[in-house]
Length: 210
Image 1: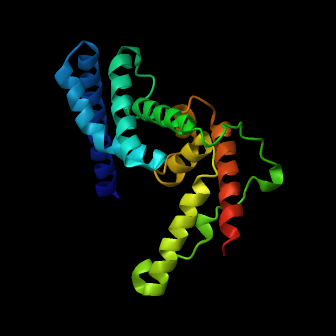
Image 2: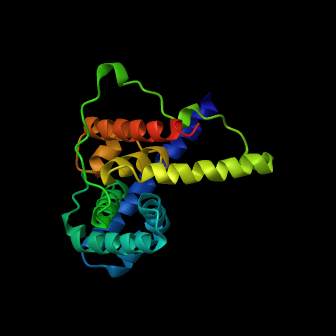
């Protein structure tokens, strides 16, 4: 018990030290220190590129989102007021840039997520109901896994940019709805509504192929 408490204390101290170090870097970058900003980029470049790729599903567009996001970050760094973590603020920029790119594709109209009926609020996600089997256990299962992945990609194209972004952030990045709402400049409830709408569309599309 004592060892566990000590380890938790050490982890907390390490997290605080890391946060303080990052805050110092941000303040230096805000003061015009380009090396400090480069250090911030190095800390998050892989995460930003991964997030961009997950959101737009196109390597070239993901690189564009990556570059534009850090450019916006650099230009607007003086506006960062430490009201949230730098990580959250940066992810907010990336999600907004990605949303802009998705909208510019012009394939889907942005829609306001509707209120969720009380009876449907605890709907189970399609993906939570799938059996966890190794796709590589047989050629048949591997082929079925590839086919399912194709159907999932097709189904994702049914979503509006906001729905797709919320779904990606929740299921592929494991972010909480409150954090997603903050990144998108909206409320946790609106993010929840968008997630529900996305899940409902995906479930309808994917249930039809089962």
